[in-house]
Length: 304
Image (cartoon, rainbow, N blue to C red):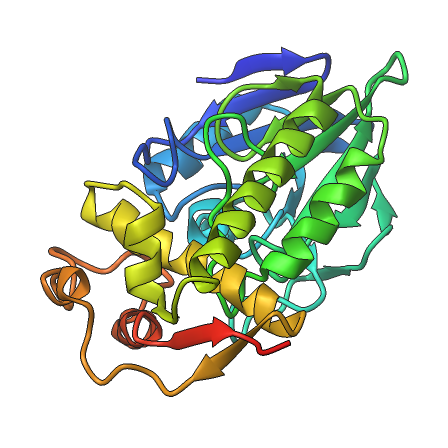
C-alpha cells in the first residue's frame, strides 16, 4: 500500500520486518516531470516488486535509486529494472562485489531534482539524497545513515566508525527540514536526532576507552561487558559495533592491536556457526566465519 508522506512522495513498506529492519524497508516513490523515481526498491521479493508496480499504476517508473548496496534496500533492483527498463542509479564504487550501476553517482551529483550526498559509515557506498518540495522545503532521504528507531550498525570492513562520525557531522551542518529514512517514519528536527546519535556513539567510545584503562580486551568480551543484549543476533551485532569503535581508536593511535585469542569467547562459541534456515541475500558463510574470527581480536591501550 502506498502511503503519502510529503507532497509528491509516497512510501511502501516492504514485508521484511525484523530486529534489523524495524517494520520493514521503506521504498519511496518520488514524482517528477518525466515519471517516478523509486528510491530503495527493497528486498528481493516478487510481492514487493508487484506492490511497487501497482502503486505506480499508469505513471512510468523512469529511474531506480539506491542509498546503498545492502540487500534489504537493493535486492529488488534487478527485478524492478527488468520489469520497467528503468536504469539503476547508485554510488560509483558499489559495496557489492562485481556490481556496477547503470548510472554511476558521485558526491554532489544532481539528477531529477535529487542531489547525492556521500555519507559513508554504515556502508562505504552509502548516499543520502537531498530533494526540494514544491514549496522549496529541503528534505533528505537518509537511508540507514539516520533513523529514529535505532542507531545504525557499523560493521567493518564495509562499515567505518570514523567515517560515520564525519558523515553525521556533515548532515548535522545541513539545513534539511525532514529526513525520510530507510526504516521508520518521517523525521522532523533531524539535526537534533543526528546530534543525539553522535553523542550516543561518543558516550560508547568513552566507555570503551575507560575499559581499556583497566585491562586488555578481546572484542567479544568487551562487547558483552558494555552491551546488555539477550537476542543472539543483537549480541553478535554488538560485537560488530564494538570492533568498529576499536578500529577507529586504532586509526587514531589510541589503542594498539595484539595477537588474537586462540579460542572464541564462550558466548560466541555457544552461538550456531550458521544461523538456521537459508542465509540472507548478500550473506555468505565466509562472511559469518570472518565475523566470528573478528571477535577473537585483542586490543590494548597504546602506551603514552
